[in-house]
Image 1: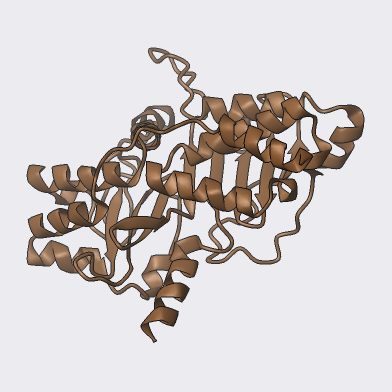
Image 2: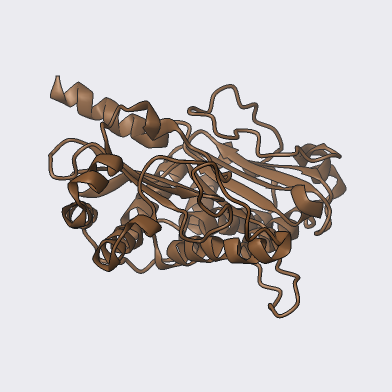
Length: 340
């Protein structure tokens, strides 16, 4: 009974998210219909193409057209597809991360720095769209929005999102500190809540949670296609106080609230069914902001990593993975089983 009450309590803590009321499949079809044959050829891949798993979040030459390649109607359709795939909060973060490219251009003073294909290295329009499969068919399909510090991967079936991971958000600078700009921090809540949680731990609890005095220099899963052999460390949910459990759920919810409403609700349910008692929170590095730190929340169907070590600990990388359903693995498995 006690565990059931804890589950009920945590369910009540999850914030409601206003649905954007969009039909993802229709938005994808409209987007594709606006493209020329040449652009469509650059955009569409088969669902099982290796390009689908080519996740990356550094400045490099990517496949798929970008905003520079679109006319105004194509841009509107592309943005509508992105908005239909995220919550309003998730879309806000994505747009603000794109805008940081202009800040980096000022900081690095690299107006003439070019990519191998001649594009500016720092450019908020260098974000690419790729469709995998056919949104007009009954079969599962997917799509990706990706560029520097953003990798958003979606799988859909039956006109609904069935997977939204891997999801990577990054910010450089983590906090804008240049003259003429407010000290804006795109991922401020993620940073603040995690420090509140780790600093609420007792010495005994902290001994369980903290696994290293020096933080890893990068998220541990990096761009792996599949999360395998990732050792679970840290303090488990049942070893936290009631207030700490609420704080942990609040931190998880902050990430889930980036997703489209229906998917977010379903993912919450999946995490709860896998057992809140199986969730753990681990930490490495400093317990104070502004010094390199790393933390991880892990469970059977959820992995969240946060790393702030680069650029004098003012450069955040954070990712959400579902070890059972990244790139719609579970969705496709069920489809193939039913199809055959």
